[in-house]
Image (cartoon, rainbow, N blue to C red; front, side):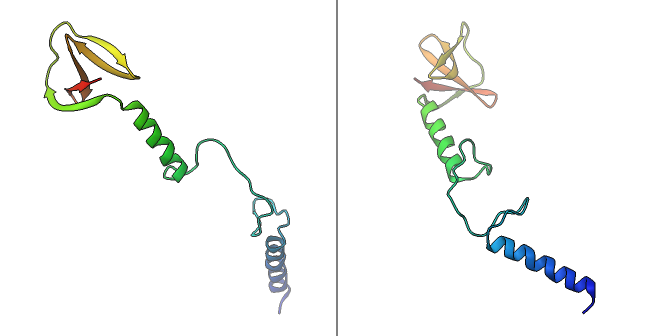
Length: 109
């Protein structure tokens, strides 16, 4: 064997031994985990279980206003914007409307 092949084999062997023994190789973590580590904050992956739970909880808490199936193209006159449970809606007389894709849907607080 030539010297280049021997050096390459020794380098591969050293990295494999470092990974197996959990030695500190910069940028590479070991195969054996010596202690549990918890990271707080938002998950790095958008589809992780923790992220899904958090988004679902937010949606459920915000959505206390029930939507109907009644849509209108324009709001009646003398409407004003109000915030109900963190949601911006239009209050027109006794009826509440929420903007929905260029139209307005009747909602029940």
